[in-house]
Image (tube, protein in one colour):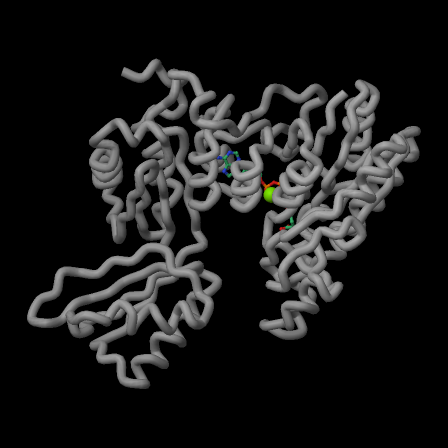
Length: 414
Ligand code: ADP
Ligand code: ASP
Ligand code: MG
């Protein structure tokens, strides 16, 4: 008998029929003698609908109240799944995040999990119940409802698996695993049997929405066995196991995947004095406004002047421009401030990059051959990212997928 945490995403619980399907799958695992904790998302589209309602009232709703609204989506699906399970003879009890007591900080709309009280769940499990928990939500120490950021049900699943020391955390979604890139963009994308935590962390942080980044961080930190599977197959296949590097065999490709993100915007501060303190003068106020900066490029100065560019999440584009313009108004010497929110980031990810040179130049050549201009570059040990015009994003991903032969099984590393 194993203790398994299963998480079902929005499309997997998108209709009552699909919820009944989920119930049947859960019943099958239960019949095999396993204990089950099931985390569900809101029905697909529901969280967007709820956030949209609030934004019909004001573009900047109070974050505490926004979380009160957003958290209702998951409350519906836990109740429906528990009813569906009871209906087919499986004892089940639903729990909101607050009822479990998934304690978070008070950063509304992007709260972090601090602790999970597993006592109630454990008691109900031992009584033979399936536990159905609302994903994406928690409660702070004052009892306020919080949410964990978009895609946060993945993190609920992994955090519960860690707290309960579950044998496995299974993420059921609408694809049958983690692919070399988003199969919606590249139909030739290939399912990976395994991917390392490090690579998955990069893929998630660089835009692959198949797993929320915090769920991967949690799984790495607490050594949770994490697998991505399809909820649309009658008998699920092997899916993709997120694993530790030493477990991945030598048939490791140099590049494991391509991640991309449209959530990007670029700000360029042109003609600033090339002197100590200028980066701080520009980025200090942005950090103070709680805006995350991603890539940063500063040109070599000429004639005592330089240009400074950086990227932020597209949702914070206007806010960032406002901060920089305010600084200019307050005395930051800059010839011009330019903004572009029609950019995208494409990244190659692979631990094989550590031991292989020339990957970046192959990437740049492939893009050049298609006439795609690279605006910014950033590299780390296991990834190379470029910023390009958004309109070339899909072309770039397809070309790179082909040039690096990601549609083919990797051969043994030379
Ligand atoms: P859920 O609602 O189940 O959480 P998501 O929409 O959040 O599902 O994540 C699944 C989607 O992630 C897939 O439908 C796919 O389009 C997208 N995706 C992006 N990158 C990848 C990738 N590398 N492998 C698999 N799916 C990916
Ligand atoms: N329902 C939430 C969202 O749409 C959380 C999730 O699905 O993981 O972001
Ligand atoms: Mg998701």
